[in-house]
Image (tube, rainbow, N blue to C red; front, side):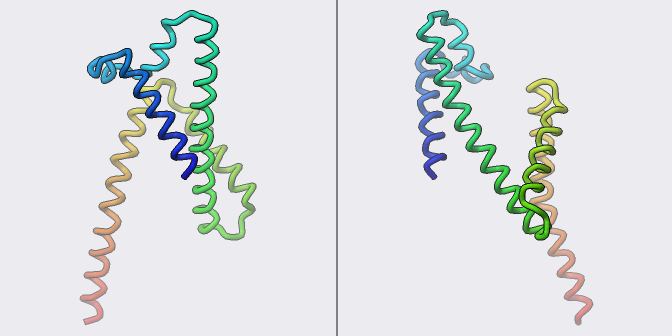
Length: 143
């Protein structure tokens, strides 16, 4: 909870800074407004602030990645209980690295996420419907 609170405060501060310099319409069209904002500034102390902000974002990203890998490791450990946890963690990290290596641009990543979101929605609705159909057939067989 502390990590999520830290991430929330970091993102809120980022929103206030970006809304202070850009309008809402400009922000809707920008992909990375903070990086665009910091690219215009060429002062040494601002570059140090940029490095500090980069450290904050790296920390929040690191916390998020570690939590996702841990939860994937716990899920895989329930599926394969006799597997070594260090081997599972290595396999998860290697698979994530291999998948992240495939797309070349951020637009490709957006397309992949969109397709995966559609697939996830289909699975979330399809599996319970399939279960209901199977239950209906089993109820008919029992009678």
